[in-house]
Picture 1 (spheres, protein in one colour):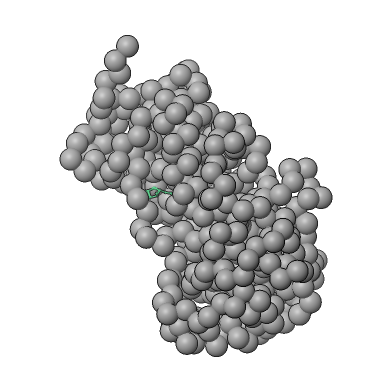
Picture 2 (cartoon, helix red, strand yellow):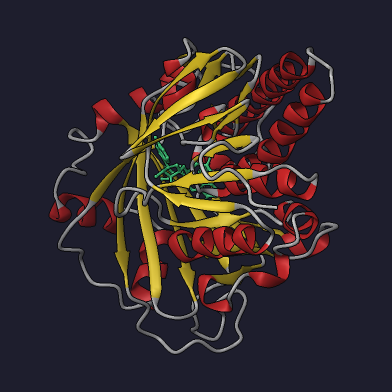
Length: 387
Ligand SMILES: Cc1cc2nc3c(=O)[nH]c(=O)nc-3n(C[C@H](O)[C@H](O)[C@H](O)COP(=O)(O)OP(=O)(O)OC[C@H]3O[C@@H](n4cnc5c(N)ncnc54)[C@H](O)[C@@H]3O)c2cc1C
């Protein structure tokens, strides 16, 4: 049967992990899905850590075995210097799902979209410019065309473009930014999970500093990311505006500097400033539409759970629309309550994590209530402990 090209059952806007998870879930339930995807801004995503918790989600979506090895490398755990100068390690291999990954987002997302196409999702390159309700359908204006569909998924990322167009608000908790540089890995790569024989470590490394924190990770085939994370208004004061200042700040670390030196990383000639603030979309769903992934709620990268959250909410969003289509009008509001509850839990975990660092009476830390006799109940919480 020929399907009407511009009037699918569900229009999914955004071809990142949330959009693909929603599209795959809907297609597996027999829906005709169009996934509208546009290339993200260059450099929008860094080399990111993917939690082992993503493994069952990727398997359930049927994509775990379809990810080319070039877009990921195993990540066996986290190392962090947080709350004290010593480096502490948490090992994923003690958990139920085994190793996580470091993923190169552009090829990772492209592999997810190929899997969606193979599962029958129709891919449409372009951007959704606006949406409006026309009777029982959404009318979406795209670059150069119009589509209509009874159901809509906003998976456009942190700016939640469609949800905002439908009247939702994006409420920000902070204005964190990541000042990032990428460098090639110079050393050969032996099978060396913790870098003890000189190879790139198969762990993420986080180190707190007076202005915020650093993160580094590497892929096996030649890329390494380093990022300094702080509040947007503190970037200049921390000297992070220029490659020279950024490099001087890196040189003042204890562990990140050591890793950079082991990889013979040289000073960057350019930096990228990426927005990394925490926010939530209110409401994240309504009759006939749902927001998923960052379009529903954005989590602080200290937790390294944005991709997992995107996959999980993409699946849950698709389930809510399916239930609504089957006659349950309350499914979108149940989904919205779930997203809110998960975000509240995340905010509590994040506060506990930041309270684990009490060494500095500086704006970044005092803003997070970590200095000046706050309760020590959360001391010991470390970055990624909510991963
Ligand atoms: C500095 C930084 C470091 C991070 N590190 C990690 C980490 O280590 N681990 C982790 O799990 N998470 C990390 N994250 C979070 C992670 O990147 C996001 O949570 C994740 O990408 C969310 O996926 P998504 O599919 O919701 O949105 P996105 O990946 O942002 O995808 C949205 C897509 O929609 C497209 N789009 C936008 N507007 C439109 C439109 N109008 N029409 C059609 N398409 C549109 C965009 O181009 C994009 O391709 C980090 C984030 C930052 C900023």
